[in-house]
Image: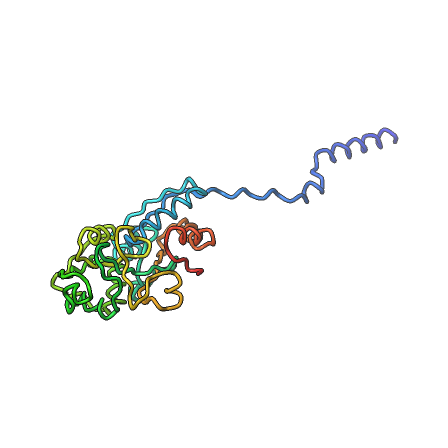
Length: 280
């Protein structure tokens, strides 16, 4: 009898060794490590937004170095089309989209941009009215002396038709008309616009606030210069949204980037780079 009891005790001891304890089962599992973001994001669209997207991507890559960015331009129309047909992850638009363009597309306004009216730094004119600006591009005012400047034929410069900046200017400044001035010239990119105005004493053009160069002059419109304050109080009339676009074909990684851009950190970079953050 005593031998039987000893055998049972040994069996119970062995069973206890082989069976996981209850306390071990109740211990919480370790928090899973967040997987690093890996992949490649493609962009197409607004040449105004291209440098902003490039700078924001550099800030994003400091946190996620395994993400690669391919940031092409081509103009807002190109970006909208590329998102619709699934050939890019993120489109860039520097104007409002029409109802047809926005159908099936997610639009994320990431900042506000002023359309600055720029002239050559040697031009003595400092201010014009919005009506005079329209008359210049419509060919009704043709010489700078009519505006208090030198006796030079005005050379208005516009962007090419796929440009979102061109679309915004036509909508806001020309009230949805196309420029008709006989001396009108057309350039492709914001950089081309800045270079043309800087090199031609009689030129007038327009640039996004984040694309301004130091060697050109900004005109007052109705006595007001573009700034964060004058856009917020409504005294400067020429401004537009800058947006990133996605579609169902975009990679999930695209939303990680857009969430970063819209975060307080991302918006602080937007302001640092020269644009107006949406949270202000």
